[in-house]
Length: 258
Image 1 (cartoon, helix red, strand yellow):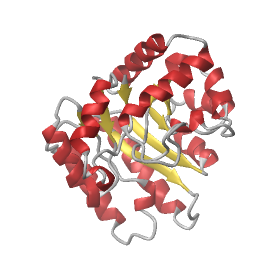
Image 2: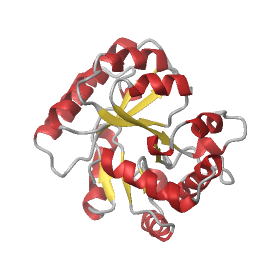
Image 3: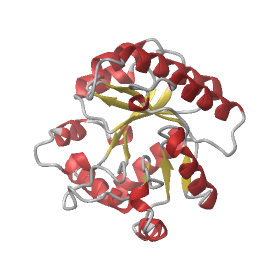
Image 4: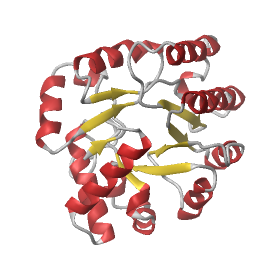
């Protein structure tokens, strides 16, 4: 299996990061993708990627909430561009980027400009994107529509909208849908959406340390829990865990060119 979205470089893992990685290996994780947030945490991510170059695979990008109320967001965006032009290491994607209007709608213009700039960078450097969308699927559809036919590919991280929205997104590029612990939540409704999406369009993720699946809901999430997500998808699709693991790993490997 592959965890396509893990913030294991976060401070929440400082006390037992090596042990957490060991548990992930024992659980059958081939590797994990590390989404970037901003310059404040990027150094930690790159340090981990250097220590585990074949297992912890970094992306680079500016998270939409790091744009909010940030007078230096353009400088942050420039950093992303410079890192892509002269990467200190191999970057496997541009992310975590996107739109997040959950906390505030006051910075939508700045978030949209940042999103489009990074989507263009992804196309320029031939990289996939990891797209965060929260309370902004209408706006995201509008943004992605402008890239139809241009070869965009990537993951809709923590997908949480309808099957109809997913079908619209598929018209704009080679997109797949990141499924994490929320699919195990009793009243999330995501289980019904996942059941209707082909297994080939799904990839596994944890978003560690956030959104731990049942029975660990409310606790710190970690990459080994991707096995629980895989099991839930297998249940919903009436397939074996092994089959879902093989299919989602193949899809993640294709999208991220592993």
